Image: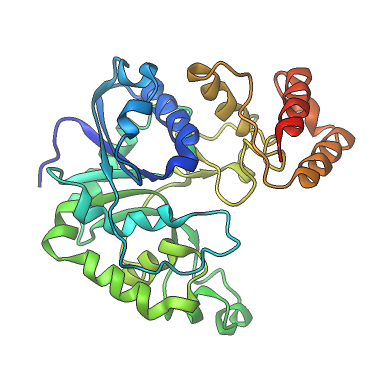
Length: 319
């Protein structure tokens, strides 16, 4: 199987994540050493008009396409009181909405690129093409790592998902999308989603893991490096930082991780603001801010005074 000349990166998000996704895109475009394509599955029909010019006019952008998600006949599990929206389930519909590609690189909108991933990705695509698998991903939990107690716990993924293998993180994946289409894997995804239903905790990631049950090419953590593990003093090679979980860099709970600095640096490239600041709960934001000042994490920011002023302004506007 041959890949097309340009690597194709795919994002799935809704209007609540536009700024985050655009920040990820500009970081990617500024990092890659060759032209790339970007395809987006989004809940609106007019996203293209909202994409910043710095992305649209970027010298590394070969093309960008936005496809509207139109699926109203599904009930997506475990979204109540969650930090994610139904957009996380858009990944299950990649075979339907992504056309004219053989291989795609899916990345979550809460990622930033800090080094050029092209050479690494091309090597992994070659491995995928020469394997019996249709997906490459990074293992988040190994089956052997779980103690027997956890394995038998009804809330552990082996019990919930009826798996006996490693469990991957779906935030960065290399996908043989043509194989998914040719074998109608989307139907299998939906079937598993309905079957698992209340056993689903990690949304579409659970569905994907249940479907593949360990049959995937292993990616290194360098291409899906979790923000809570990242240190700017580390000598490890890191291509993409993934801000997984609820502690995001635009929230005070996640603003003081080392990797969050890269998020705000890229955010400044396309928005006339020093920091991207959002709040879920006003008092939680204040508590996190005070905690960061006490433990001195606050002073790790590149512009602490500007961040403090930004927090105050945003809290005054927040209802």
